[in-house]
Amino acid sequence: MSTLYVVATPIGNLSDLTTRAVETLSAVSTVAAEDTRVTRKLLNHLGISPQLESLHAHTTPERLAALIEKLNNGDMAVVSDAGTPGISDPGSALVAAAIEAGHEAIPLPGPSAIVAALSVTGWSFDRFLFLGFLPRKKNEQLATLESAASEPGPVVAYESPHRIKATLANIEKQFPERQLVICRELTKLYEETFRGTATQALTHFKEPRGEFVLVIEGAGDIPKTEITDEEITKTLENLKAEGIQGRTLVEQTVELTGAPKKRVYRLSLSSK
Ligand code: SAM
Image (tube, rainbow, N blue to C red; front, side, top):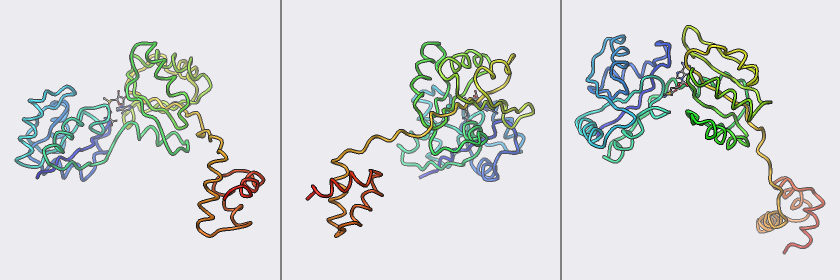
């Protein structure tokens, strides 16, 4: 059994390559890369020269089989042009084929534009929705944005400089009030983080250049659905089965269900 190392690489600043990534890229004999020319530059910078094999987004089954053949003979690494393989980038098909062939896939975490952008929002959240690259067609894009309207956490999308203005106009239509955090050229010379509404962003990004991550403020708390009498009764019964009675029974049921005390008391009288 061999190991396929899934190695994150910098999204701009080469110093963001982890020590472990350097050690691994130096140790393996083969690296599967999205664009071998891009990866060759990185490897030249590191002074190492493993064999490079190309792995495109639409790699054929024959090509995948050839890569697995190489993996059968020893450990391999997979990288994309920038960031984490498999995140809006090639990589997942090779990981799936490697697992299928009985090998192990080990991640080497590192840069990813989604996580970098989320980390500077300053918003507190315990979930987020990643939409990848939004559909190009206006109606499809509006429909995708609409489908994300009730997401409680931030909504993240990748965007190109050519399409960002059209996308911001659609966000302005769908979410005129929401705050956005737009990260441009993260970790690079012209790095910039914009904060404001879509209308303000359209004024700010007059001639957009570089790479962008869009983060749209979420809809807020997950709406709590009203608890039913049946659910409260079930909780009462479960606690009774544990030997809990009287005032403690009512108090603990209130705590567990969030239902008003009077309602719990009334249901406790009629429950078995
Ligand atoms: N796999 C990568 C990752 O983990 O971040 C993403 C690859 S995806 C093909 C490329 C997109 O990621 C760009 O179009 C842009 O939206 C975003 N991106 C990548 N690098 C970036 C950077 N330095 N600053 C802002 N966005 C970036």
